Image 1: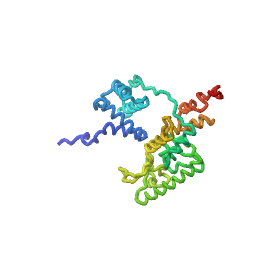
Image 2: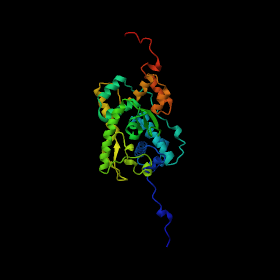
Image 3: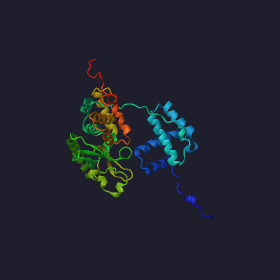
Image 4: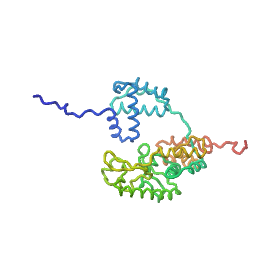
Length: 332
């Protein structure tokens, strides 16, 4: 009797999207990037009748990107994100050299000035916020944080004595330090006291766990229940983690803050299309207007290239390029 060959016992080859997930995690891409890539690759496959990407080439990639721009009317940044997902698929998952990439036309993102609120408008918007949303918005403006950077702050990342915040794993997986507004201290301490009481209640009922970065949960098995690792802005509800069975509490969801800010902008009677990110733009612009060095602002914002920070030189109160109009003292 012939013995079965080794191929009969070989593990089945992972499905394509599972290979994409594995490739993202090996490279430590953020979970959001992973989700975005998988979404675009799935749409690409469905667009071409579920044909395998190995059967497709530059013509099919161009057709998909053109459809996004012409039919779906997506923005240039969205179209380029889709292209990035497909390039990741072919290069990192399928192992193709992509000699045809240079022939694909990339969408050019139009240069636009950021929306900025003046100091009075910032106060008016904050006046229509309350609870954690007000505190979050205050830190977006006072510390120049991105929304998710703020919501992912942990208790240990706030240094009251030195008046600074430590941003862990910001954009580009970079850590940085930024300023903590002095007047925010008492409000944050009061908020943390309430969050700490909630955490103690969670511990009392067998919950109190929080997600930890990378492999820290294996290195420090109990760290996920310790107070320093808890979110500064915890969610109102808990959930059961599927893999470990732990009862965890996630951080406050970004859509809750976004909705609150959108309502506050409307109630403040501000016609500008302001959002949570507008507070970060306003932080940079007001620092520049106050005479702070562009390199210092770059470090506080976490920009890898100073040219990204330079956009704020065009929106300071002194006018384009910092020029003061000769008609500044004339009544019109």
